[in-house]
Image: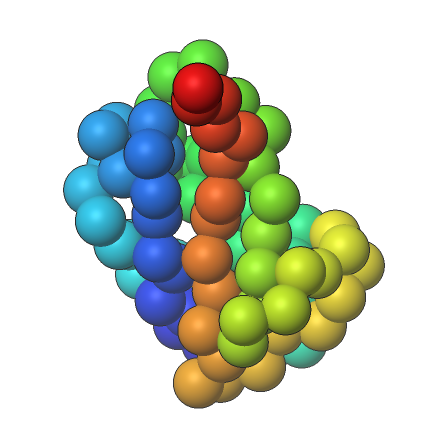
Length: 78
C-alpha cells in the first residue's frame, strides 16, 4: 500500500514537504520510517517523533491506507 508522509523541519529540508512511500499491506510505523529513511539516501537526519492521524505513535503502531503520517523532528528555540 502507499502511505503519504508529511515532513517537517530538517526532514522537509532534505526530502521536501511530503513523500509517498510503499509499505506492505499490513504495516507499522517502523515500516513507514524505514521506507522514508531509504529515500533519504543515507543522509544523517535527527530521530523524529511520529504522529498517525494527529496522535503520537510508537514504532509498532499499525498504519492503514488513508492514515495521515507525520515525521516531527526535535526542535529548539528560544
